[in-house]
Image (cartoon, rainbow over all chains, first blue to last red; front, top):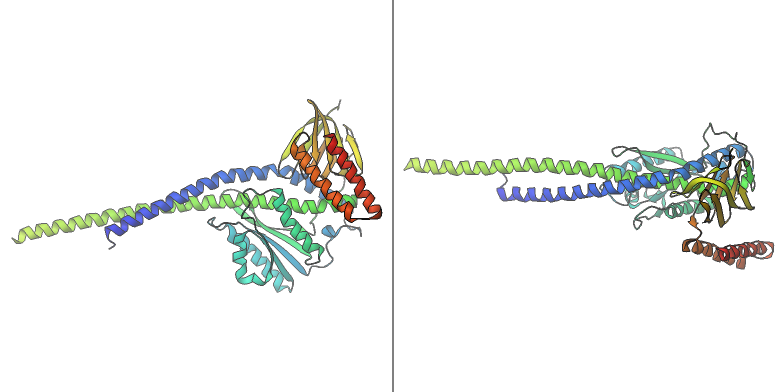
Length: 289
Length: 131
């Protein structure tokens, strides 16, 4: 039986852990609100951008002059996976679930004999992927200094992607991130961004005048559209991270509470047992006289 | 009678302005154009310049650095990469930055290309002076 002093120390240590997880949960809750607001505020731009690109793309699709970002390079040999994770841990399965999805995707591509290159955003994903896909990691974007993800951060990621695309280093790019569904559910998502995917039902029925030409606008717009997609993904990821951390810390706080209860019961039992033992000793000592 | 149009100015991070407007003057890539109600549907890219909105409460001016505008008979939506109220220092700094960049490019280019850059730089300098 553990002695009383040890139990007391355990209880004190679990109590201070609970304080920390509780504080982290509250911080995550506050940050989640901010992250969600940012995601909502960014939506009108992203929606409009997607609308315009889709309608333009539908009308340009199939023509020989379609930009490479839309039509692709004509090959599907080399794939770039942009894996976006958090810079910090202690957020439940948040990082692992993205990495898992990326890993499955990479495994499938490798089995098909394709070349896989991986660009990581966020430290945690890089650490996890280094173990088995270390040879495929080609670049990394560090956002650990960034307090609030802004459009410039997305542009930084996007520019890296465009540089590689222009240099002919890959044919297809897919981004991996967690879509924010609710505090308890974040859905790991893979979206192909290059070449752009035009939904089947996109039609060019609104007759727009284009200034300058359709293709010139599209060439100008597609990089922005890709950047916007990355930006949206980063924001969704930010909200998901805080949501995941909040529920993970909520669980941790509750578990710590349970543990304290259990330990306290054990402590009281031990104490009582010691008292009972002493009493028995006194009584049997007195009877022996 | 439709004498007003819905005007929205959005940046990737947030919606900057939204409301009813009589006319919106847009610095298009091929030249300025003014969108009024019942304008033909148009999509145009923007060049760095000043966006003038004639709204209900008078005229509002914004500096945009690039992006595009979608004009339909009822609404005009400007999607700007960066946009600032024209009166602020940020607007001037943003344009100044682009001006430096264009001048740098003009210095590196030659022939007809240089003329284009020089012209763009001159235009930009005028815009900055007019702020």
